Image 1: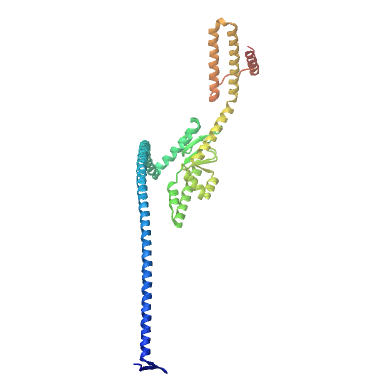
Image 2 (image 1 turned 180 degrees about the vertical axis):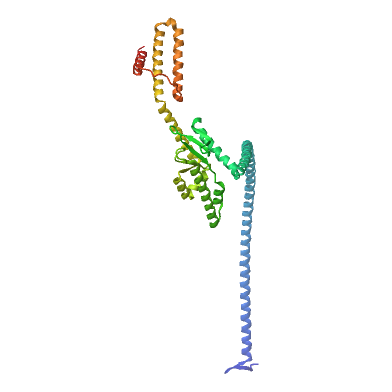
Length: 398
């Protein structure tokens, strides 16, 4: 039984040793299983305790959750009631705001409607004005076209210039100081003649309107076309200047200068701006170019000269009229004195006073209009003035 089985190195393993080793191993395995079983039982007990504790904690948590849920339900109910109350307040406030907004909107719409009505009324008025302006513009356009057609005709253009010349002269001078279509002794006829005081030689004015040449010069586009238009304008205006100088400057019969009337300010300005040599040529030929404004100024100067000459011519008559005026004032003072001394004769004296006053008014009107009649000079004008001064002193005293 104790036979050797195998050897491990130098040690020989026998059957008894092997059985003992197996028995020891089995015992060790049994002890290991026992310890493992006890350990597992302890672990299962610990797990059971832990699960029991977890169950207790879960119950506590469920109780807390139920309590929290009940509190939440109460809070939700309170919040629902609060929300219901707030919703009712909000509905009431919104309704009030809507009512106020609707009222304000209604007022705003009413005001806007009134303002719109007023604006439409103003717009209708302005449209009526615009329609009137359009009609006036149409009439003006027709007049401009008519004027253009008139000015395109040379004879009609000449009649237009003469018409403007006659209107300016007739409006500024007395009737006996000018003559239209005046004929010179040689048979030559001028558009207008102005007579200066103390000189039998008339100042002759002739109307010229070189519109075609000026229009061609203005509308010239190229240098060559402009040069031809400039040459044509110089030639036309130069011919007019030569004709006036030869026809209306007659020694001993006319004034030393003559006027060439241009009935357009723009034509006159065009000549002065671009054709200074033509202006100088006219000056050397003793022909003065005048526009409507310059002719008006010249007529006013002639009017002042005529008035001054008449004043000088009538100086003696003015002095005589002043003496007669003083005599009338003296007689008026005497008659007023008679009226004061003879109050009973008030009717006759007042009538005489009115006659004297009428004479004074008539003489004053004649002095103002420079219309006098030759009368014998009044002697003793200085005495009459002294008498007038005494009369004024006596009146202040009374």
